[in-house]
Length: 209
Figure: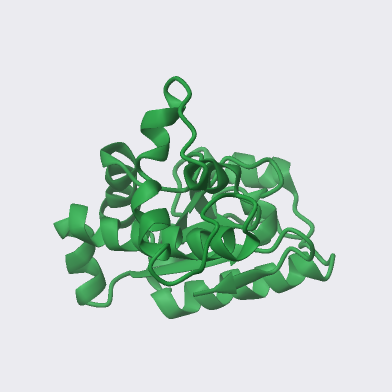
């Protein structure tokens, strides 16, 4: 039974590699239906004085991807940012800077997922209200895949969609490094790592890129 929150002292002892291993082990627990039991009352009480999450995960908003459960993480363990299509903008990158530079997180994870509706919509060049502007953030990844995958270039082509999902994660990581000198410097000195993965809907496994 997990009762203790991750403390600043414990966080300071972690390396990016150790945090990644923690998340990989947690994902294995999730896929094996052996999630850690937690005493949430104790965790809430312990967290009143502060937080020291080990990682920040950027995920799609998809309801089938419950980030804390996917990585078997408890209250206080990870920051989670969510937006349809798991892309970054200034606000999300700023949140990552806060998580890593201010709050001491050691790992950034960009988590895409199979069957992503936002990526499919970008593949289909959907135009609808504010969704049009949102999809423009995903379109560069979709367009780059067209040079390596045979058409048709729409959501009916599973190979095209899957390649676009992977490329969108990679593109997002490139954008993080480009938009944030702070995070790039932390990564270069080994204080943080930036990793990408794609969640598999059928079995819950995260395939790391």
